[in-house]
Image 1 (cartoon, rainbow, N blue to C red):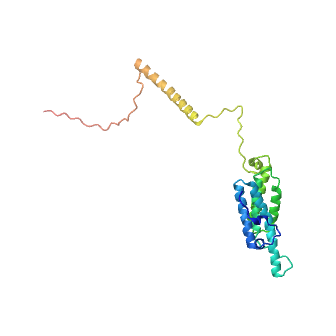
Image 2: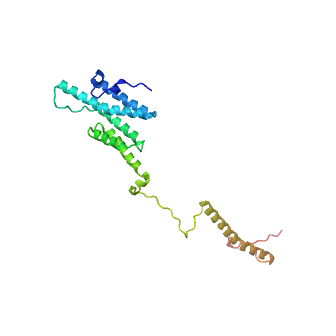
Image 3: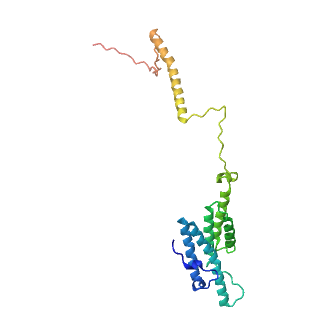
Length: 238
C-alpha cells in the first residue's frame, strides 16, 4: 500500500502549524482531491472515496479556522463574509466528483444526498460556482433518466415536432418493383411494339413480289420541274 500523508488523520479542531496555515491547508486539500481522482481512475474505489470524504470534511474545518483567524486579527465579533475561491471551489469539485462516481453505480443510494448537499452549497455561492452547479444539475438529470425504464427516444417522443412516417403495406397493393426491373419491362414492351409494326410491312412486300404488284417500298414523289418556254430547233445541212 502507498503511504498516506499524516495530515489526513488530523482532526478538524487541530491547531498544528500545517492546519493553522490557510495556504498549506489549501495545498493539502487540493492534493487530496487530485489523488482521489487518480485512485478512482485506476480502480481503487475505496481509497478514492475516502480521500473525497477527507476533502468534504476538511474544507469546512479549514474555512472555520480561517474565520476565527480573521476575527482575532480584526477584533470583530461579527463573522466576516466568506472568502470566495479559497475553499469553495475545492469543495464544489469534490461534490461533483463524488456525484459522478455515484452515477456510475445505479445501486448507490447516497447519490441523492450528495446532489442535494452539493446543489445547496453551490447555489449559496453563485456566481463564481456556476459551472459546478451546471455539472451537478447534469448529473441529476442523468440520474433521473437512468432510473426510468424507457430509452431516451421513447421519453422525448411526444415532445418532438417531427414524427417519422409509419410504413404499412396494404393488402390489395402490389409490392413495388425495383427501378431496374421497371426499366427492363418498359424496354421489352417497346421492342414488342416495334416488332409488331414491322410485320405488316414485310408481309405486304412479299405479296407484291409474288403477284407482280407494286414494290414494297414506293418511290417517293420527286420534285416536278416546270417546263420552260420552247427553244427553236434548227437543222444545218452540209
